[in-house]
Amino acid sequence: MQKLLLIFLLAIPLVIAAQQKTYVPGDNFEMYLENHGVGDGIANNDSVWTGAIDTLKFISEGDCGIINFTGIEDFTALEYLACWSLYGLNIDYIDLSFNTELRYLDLSNTIHLPLNLSNNTKLEVFLCAYDPGPISMSNSVESIDVSNNPNLKILVCNKANDLTTLNLRNGNNTNITNLNISNNPNLNCVSVDDVNYSNANWSRDSHTNFSNDCLINEIEETLTLTDKTLIKIVDILGRETKVVRNTLLFYIYKDGTVAKKIIID
Image 1 (cartoon, rainbow, N blue to C red):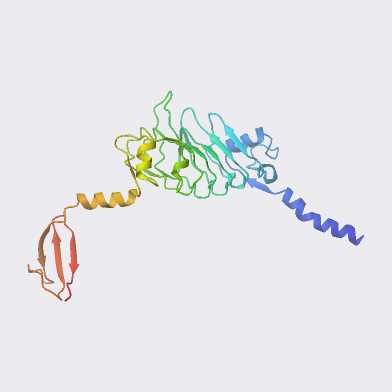
Image 2: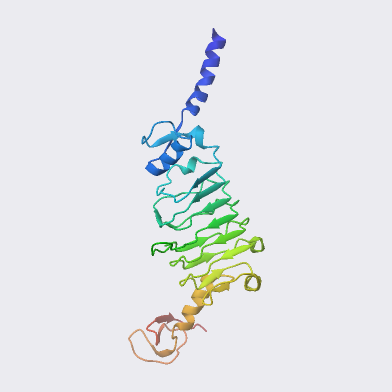
């Protein structure tokens, strides 16, 4: 009797684990899972069995209608995620930080929030291209950072009209065999591992440049555009003066900036 009781008590955690559910508030996402046999069999109850999805490796929805991917955090074995749209899609929530096995990601023709791909170190393909098709919309992705994705081989994000920042410095740029970042009018600079290699192997729009660090470039350009011509030097009483050592003076420049300086012997 005691042995049976012990076996029963040991089995309780397994039963609880098997009954664990994942919260899926997005109706279209839950419907997709139910239709593919990995739900809990109850439509529109905002949940699916965790044990049915944590081994799933493949999600693909043609002309995707999923706008809320809450619950995808429990798809820990997911390797392939494709949610592309014919007419443009506004994805309002997607967190891929727990999908560390992800290798293929297609969000073409979607309008989505900034993605954090820093945990997706196995990612090989990322597609966020935009094809206007029958209507005139633009992909509103503004920033892409794949600096923590050393296995990346293909990145296609053309016609993303709002794209302004792209960081490709992942330490393994020679692994990228297909890069398409054309027709991005606001993308002026792309951070890369090696400028010479990028210029020799990748095409880009004429206004887009490759740099080892676009942030530094931006700072340098700002400083170049700023007129730092010195107009005058004044003391603490506002009287114009020449340089006086060991005295606090104010240097007034043509661009309107003022610098406090003390030149010490």
